[in-house]
Amino acid sequence: MRAAVLVTSPQDRALTERIRGQTSDLDAEITVVDALRVAPTFEARMREADTVARRASSNAVFWFRVTGGVVVVYVSVPAQDRVLVRSLGGGAGKVSSSTLEAAALVVRDGLRALGEGATVGELRARRASARTSYRHILSSGVHLRRARHRRARSSCLRGASRVPRP
Image (cartoon, one colour):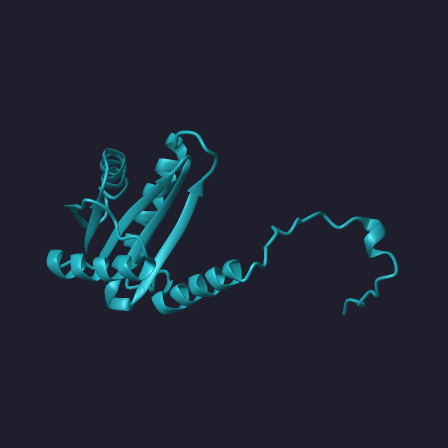
């Protein structure tokens, strides 16, 4: 298993070292590719991942986007035309050590699954169309609010029909 990591900052390099530690027991060779920046759009990032995968002869390409206390991990699998995207952490402060470790574990699990022949992530086209639909909703002026989940109270269940158990 060969993988390439796109590194654009010292923080990416430090995260790559955590990944090396997490994957030291796997049969994986990780190549660091220095990049000035990661492409700004999803489609351009996928094209860039395909190019890096060909040049480095790698099965997967991964990179990170760090904003405040959030790390977004991208694992692209060009041969499967798939991408895994995970957002970790939160807040506006500095990224916590546990968030960085969780990001390394996302990459480890992805590489391990690929090494076992599993399918990783979702189809790129599905992800791209979902992003386009979301942008369309935002540009149309419709505002989305986060649904609040509350535990059902017993008073909410009064009068509900019960299905007898066999």
